[in-house]
Image (cartoon, rainbow, N blue to C red; front, side, top):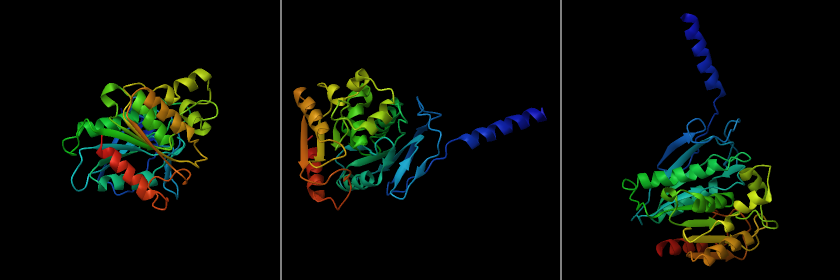
Amino acid sequence: MKKLTLLLLALTLSLVAWANKTIVYKCNADYSVKIWDNTTAPHSNEEKKNESQDKNDKIWHTSECVIYIYKAKGTPTGQGVVILPGGGYRNLNIKGPAAFGEYLQSIGITVALVKYRLPNYGHKEVPLEDAEAAIKYLRDHAEELNIDPEKVGVCGSSAGGNLAAYVSNFAKVETKPNFSILFYPVISGEVGLLHAGTILQLLGRNLTPTLLHKYSLENCVDNTSPPTLILLSDDDTTVHPENSLAYYKALKQNGVKASMHIYPSGGHAWIGNKKFKYDKEYKAAVKDWLSKL
């Protein structure tokens, strides 16, 4: 019996030793909630490396889904926004989205900033289920957070914009967002438009024309897609601006309320950056659009 007990203890310690180490992102959120990790979520991204955070606040090798809640300040609008950081699905470039979350908080909007699990070359269902779980959390806790459960949207930048558009069109009915805000999103897998690194991480290395077409999000829009605001810079050389144009055109063709703001300069990855030349303009545009939903 003693030998069996020692064997079980050794096995337990072995499992603990092999568990992924995770990080706690330090931000100004009111509180955080762990939704699940690779051992408890519906699917695993099979990440073997430990989570890490570099000097630029980018988070790598995510193996758990954690949401950081920013409660609305002032008079709540009743809206909730799930923010999905970008990073090419290689990492989470979380600093700018966190700053933008604080802005939304300041104008009466409750925010859930998501540290989601990356797809790790082809586990495309993983970030989708994390985004859906964050939406579900806001709706399930709508009363205590002063949110209208029918006013919960998503916001994403770059690859996070891809995920926001992805969940807008692939989510189950009960977890579909009520609106979307996309910053310079990766949308298309079509030749000439695709951002290869992002698409490879999401769909895996064995790409086929059929797979690329299926997950080119401009092809997925229908009349149930949520109202969408798109913001980008004309001189973005990282994600071709025609990604946004393709998605906007698909929304309009399907009768979905949509608006798009193209700024003359700024390049890529400027969400939450106060040095962006059009910082005040884009924030005003977001506030105005949200106020009219």
